[in-house]
Image (cartoon, rainbow, N blue to C red; front, side, top):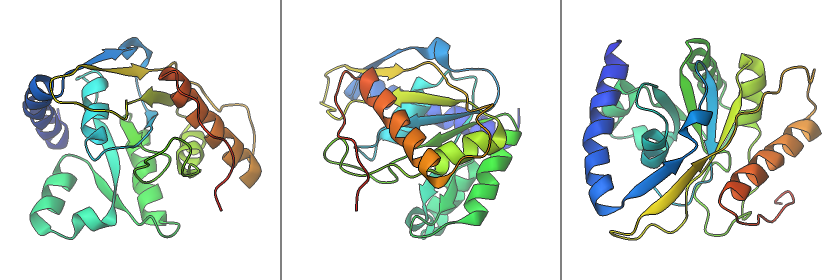
Length: 205
């Protein structure tokens, strides 16, 4: 086991104890997480969602996350994030370094955790998803795995996290910008359906 995965596993275990006691949860569909590389995608409504994604994916897998560049301004925080395999992305532009790092994560057989909306939302469908998750999945030949994390997180009240079946983009050929947007919207629809919620469709201005 490499050092990053070891540290990730230890921290995941320790943080899970706290969350399991204070904000309990139950995961459905863990069997849908495939072996090997995969892009795990979830809705994003709370700062704790990356923790819940890590808890939901089976412990034997290492989930590496893209995180906003601002979190890396503090040297101690940046050091810890990098130590567990999290890497920065500049959300205001096409960040080629982040894309290369993400592809390397997938090529190494690990799971890449992404929130396609790119930011926390207050209302379902408030923000149109970015196409990065779909683009990375196709380039790496890795499946997309939808995950629903409830918006409401109440102290001592158990919530239900649902992982859907993975789907592949293999055989689709070269995707246009419109294709990427359509598939990204379909991905978010799949995520919403896992939580039995209805998502507003349409591209944001």
